[in-house]
Image (cartoon, rainbow, N blue to C red; front, top):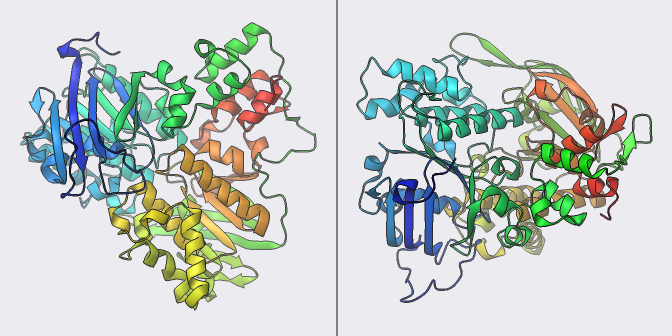
Amino acid sequence: MPDDGGTDGIAASLRDVFFSYDRAAEFPDHGPGPEPDPDSRGGLVLRDLDLDVERNAVTVVMGASGGGKSTLVRTLNAIIPSFIRGQFRGEIDVLDRDATTRRTSEMAEHVGMVLQDYEAQLFGTSVESEVAFGPENLAVSIEAIPDRIETALETVGLADLDGRRSPAGLSGGQKQRLVLASVLAMHPELLVLDEPTSDLDPRGTRDLLEVISELAGATNQESAMANGPDPDTIVMVTHKIEEALLADRATLLAGGQVHREAGVREIFTDIEALEECRVAVPPLVEAFDRLGWTEDELPLLPDEAVAAVRQRGLNWDPPARLGDTLPGVPAETGERTGEPLFEIEGLIHEYETDRSAIRAVDGVELTIETGEVVAIVGANGSGKTTLAKHLNGLLTPDEGEVWWDGRDVTQLSMTEIGQHVGYLFQNPDHQLFAASVREEVAFGPENFGLEGDVLDERVDRAIEAVELEPLEDADPFNLSKGQRQRVALASVLATDPDAIIFDEPTTGLDAVQQDRFMDLVAELNRESGLTVVMITHDMGTVARYAPRTVVLDDGRVVDDGPTREIFATDDLDQWGLTEPHVVSVSNRLGDDEVLPALSVDELVRGLGGQP
């Protein structure tokens, strides 16, 4: 829990901080100056910012994508202004050290950081060498390093991973945990995490958040990390509201300044402040606010909501029961389906390693019809991305067959399949290469033969759809990760495909962008019959937008059916999945024959309110 004030209770203090990535930027003589545009990398990113970070607490930093969150936390280990110079002014004290005059290498002894682009931190040839690198550079004794490696990997849930395995062959979630392990092995006092669970499955997210809470709250007698001190203070950037609720404190950024900073309950029941900062309102807060409950009565978590409903004696009228005509999902997607578009028969795919082959997909049988919206879910390493990459020929089966529209995918060129099946990668940087946003978006349709006004119209429409008009001349690699995600999406939309495969489509997007992005996808499905295959760990997105869910475990399909029925089961946890809060509450209010609510509207309606 946080300390009770005083200078000893403050881990970091920022005063009058201004920063711009433009080295020629001018700062105002008085006041904060003009408000920055979150969709522009010019101008002031931080302006007259003041913030105290409390010791012995987990503090989440939230706000609009591109709005300065990553910039703010980079000041805590002197990446700004020591490494990324830009234009800086202000005072920053971190762990009683002046972070404006220290080199990043000096601060690294005390402040550990997991970057938003975590893959940029990986360079070791093996898991063990990756974790050992930090302690080696801090001159930790050779005898102590193996214990640090073992403890760090165990802490992040990678104890069973072969230490000789190459990081390049790991799943996105495993890579993210490995980076955290490499940082923890250095025993930092302050741990800075920039979207540390973006590619983790729901169970992995929950487990990691428990570790984070233990690290921040551990005492010298009961340490969560053996053989050295814990980071007693953790600062975490996130867009995931359900994980933010588990922190101690929250900071909302808006316009390059701290809009609000307080305890989690105070922040996340302030609906007006959340909306002003483009932060998602917790679904249960939104639901019970619509039911007319006062701010101090609003529940944050399912346990609170269920207890409050029962105490008030409210009746629960579920959206459906087993055996009823099954209602669709809230987004009304996937309601008009047709002939099979993708057919997978006996698919097996293996990856070769130094020791043996790893079977990532094991005998999958799957059919996806035109016009469907299908979510593929499962734990990290369950084979989701490997399976999806067979749908557009990025991978070739070791055994089995994959058909698109009645044609063997392995017999089609990348140009042939690429005109019909778009693919948005888990990491947008894997498909970005052009010098400007507009060139990037135009590349696909131009290579498919479009030119002139037709090409310009297609590119304009795609850029407008993802709201990047002000940045069409910008270098994509100078944008935030959320912005780069939108560039990658626009480049796929510009090809006007029949089907789109999304791998973690909402990673790095703020609440407003997530809604707009998924609403756009839903509209394309409803109006033009776009087929959507969506790999995601965001169970709330699955509940609202995907009528059908396919669950993978250890490379095999272990469940496949209507999302509402799958969410009614008690088996999600064994597959590394967790229920969204709305689903959890409605499941617990009903009996075994009741199907759950999938949205805030359905929960409100079921409790007698007006959605």
